[in-house]
Length: 412
Image (cartoon, rainbow, N blue to C red; front, side):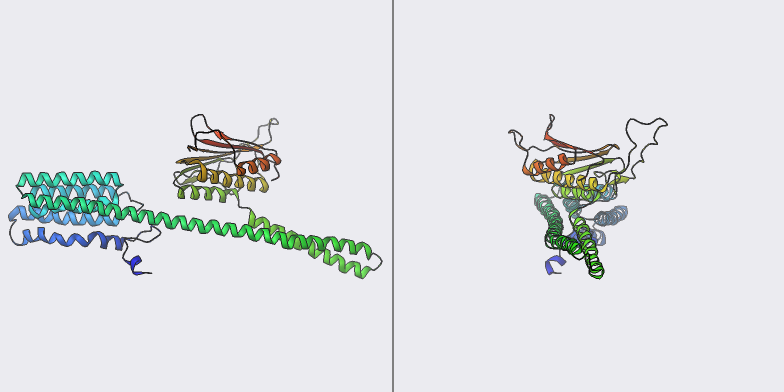
């Protein structure tokens, strides 16, 4: 780990590093020596000194609690904002009641605003701190120089720590994007290996099988030769099956994996993803990924006593699962590359006789006539060959939609 990494406020992945954040945000608390000096030297006496001491202890505890409550720069706990509000109230109270060096307490609150709040809210907190210092200076008759210096500290430190937080946020997002690029590169390498494996071994093994069959017909008069050739043919057929199974495993990802991958890719592109599935699908569950909550899918209803109009729902075959996963991948790629969307909803419904997949976004992809690209054209050909239908285009209310209907028994 480099020296630059060691002195940052958190890890590159955005994970919690409370010690570093505590050190970084608390370094400036050395200036609280001036309020403490007013208590120790007798500038504040009697009950006023006692209340000042209690307020200072509460302020420091609330300040440190706010810093430690956040899980990371990108994630707040349920205690962060209540503690931040308490710190703000204590800082304002100290500035308005005791004045003097106590007017610096709102400056510490500004540091927390820069770390804990969105930029616009942090600017509002800076304005509140400025008003507090101005009011305290006016009420207590502080010198204009003191008010100006503290006001400049509010502005400069506020802007500085807002910039630090934004920089950290961008760094975390960059590392996540790099991880996603590496994962996609690994997936592409798997596909390349699958293609090479199929092209190199698949053809050769098929040729061995054909030659073995031909040699078997030519050697029908020699039982021993016929037996050896049969063994060769059997081994070659088995190897060919194993190669095809390996290629299939490399090339095809399940629908559940593709739905999870779609959520990750959309989030990395700044698109709010909602994935909803209904029906029994292998390896999936009914959930709303925008909330991060999943519940097991409901089992299909019991068939009635009389023969139903449609057969009862059964899980789709593995080829259909792979085809749906491929459609999710292609549709998500289109949203990320072309739609300029902020929200995308993926709805998957399996009704027994068919599967319905819808990918709807709120993108603004130009104002000209809609023309499907090569990706959608290839998707349409594959779905049509499986007996399904594809509808893609702009929505009347805005955005774009891809709707695919595939028979349950489709062979992808």
